[in-house]
Image (cartoon, rainbow, N blue to C red; front, side, top):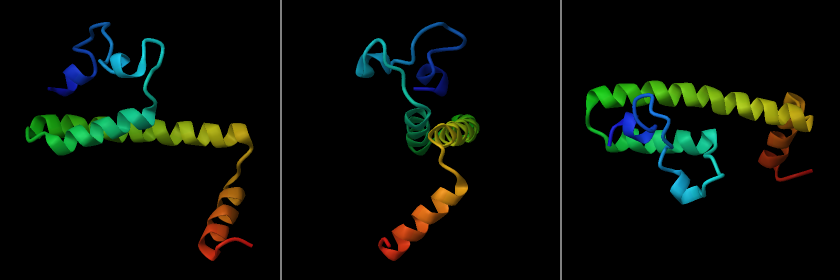
Length: 94
């Protein structure tokens, strides 16, 4: 299966094939797509497909980061909050 098959063909308005697993109204998250692309890049031995997958992984990684940043902003989470949470996690709490 090529990357084009995974994404629904070359410009075709088809689904990704994931609708069957997730239901007709569900769409995969960027993280799920990233995981799928990373798994496929490990499986394939075609250098051309690996290069295309590497580009796709890089692009989707940016989308995951942007989405995470937007979710944090919507919840009011700041970098200071994340720092405190990391420090508490490392020291076992208060």
